[in-house]
Length: 254
Image (cartoon, rainbow, N blue to C red; front, side, top):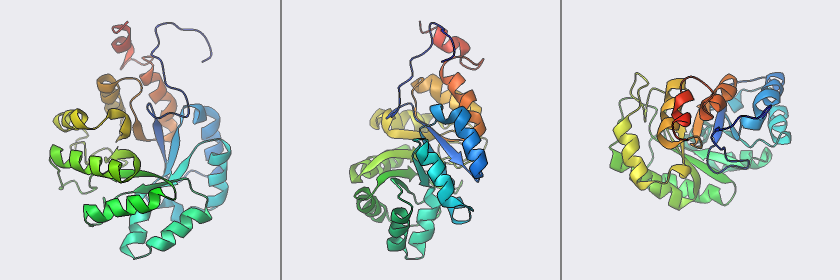
């Protein structure tokens, strides 16, 4: 930090297994990626190239190299995995991961319908090739899962080989663990946390109010995902109690 300040919550250090900030890159140029990393790279743990944007991104390898040279892991969004699977091109997807020297991959079923057994088999296969992050929840706002189902799905995917499980919210933060208004389904989150260790979950939280809610519930070192590049520094101040939203929260804990 730039100067001393007492009574600031202690953050975990990289490489982090909890307190992760996962950033969603929805189409930054190489120059924008460089500018983003200059300011926010120190606070960024992993970058997702949103949904299937990598398919249409110019200079893809150059951008991947920028992140990798900065020591920031990067991976393709789960929708790309689904796009290959629905077209019976899973083996081609694996070759794409190798072609780009990807170390992480996301397995999701938010847009396709496959059995959970089949999804877990994809996790098992890919976990021998890369570090797998799997996503639980549907992108369809009309599909609402009971808490026990979220728990069973998360547990099975961790057992199948997922490093972390993502709680679905989309980039808008209005499905999955949230109501369409963006409000957290508090009962659902509470139930999940009774059975699934919080450090194994990445909560998608693109909205500030959602980030604040999870930080107050779980603490400074909660895993948060789908953070916009311009929101990484603001999020870090929220984590440290240096923004109005959490200013008193951490002081009262001392």
